[in-house]
Length: 435
Figure 1: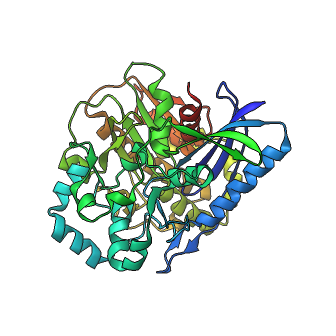
Figure 2 (figure 1 turned 90 degrees about the horizontal axis):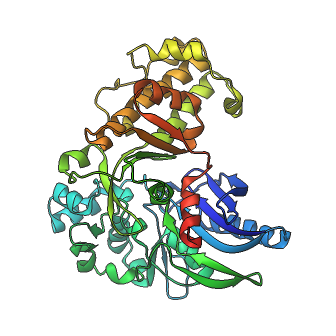
């Protein structure tokens, strides 16, 4: 069977998904790879382990014989650069976007290039240290100048994965335009600071997200896409569905609410509340609101599970407890603190877990509270307009408590749950194959 293979490399889960030519999933697998530490002892993804996993999956599928892989593409998280030298050698770790920027580097940057809020507005990028991936290059230049001099090409993770098999260095707009602090949205070009620091010359030529090249892998000719940022990839299939206004809630480590129908300009006030712009494959900006939902959820889940000695592997088979949900969702009391969510009304610290009668009670309460913050993000992205429909895909689309929590708080909004396991991989498949 002729098929399209997509590797969807998330911050937590790494997936491989096969589609037929009708974009129906015919096979998938996923893994969680152990992190390593960078030179400062900060945990980060192991790019060599990721490559080994991808090569192993690809080799097995090609040798299996049941699938004729004709197209290969990659979706991956943003805020990630791989830097290579002239011979293609990887020069640095795949830095973790939660890594704090050293204060002297941050101070130096803004002393050179002015007001933080002005820079954030011009680049549609809240000031977020390593999450502004362009500043990782500034960090390398002044912390490791010898390494910076050796860099021939700097590619975001989706494009590097493509390069690894095609050997064609490329840049692509959806990766460039996701809170990187390198793109001037009003000028439709790299920001002046990128040119001033000699960084622009380390970026390969920009290619369209739908571009591909042909390469031979294990004797099989395959069209290889240029890779795409996962959140923008998740939005792409929905942009083809209808011209009727809708929102998309793309969930994973980050939860991103997209409003492709926004007419309001990005403001400093919106940026401060984690609103921003992303570039779509066609180069047009799209308004979005982001929330560090998946990461926050996982941290708190593990804490609750450990306290109640609950095997989290059982969570997916637990039946929905409607009575417990109704009890919790009628209360306005908040018990959990989520400092990474940047919300004013949450408690300063968690209620002691001994307060809760069971794991289920604590878990339902935690998910309900997270949903209330998600509602704030949805309303910010809505910009006061009334939407009839919102699509949800990604990890939280399978969480019944979360979905029911949103429905209860937004009774007039039709919430459509995607039946695809990964909207990002579907978008990547559509880009490389055409639709």
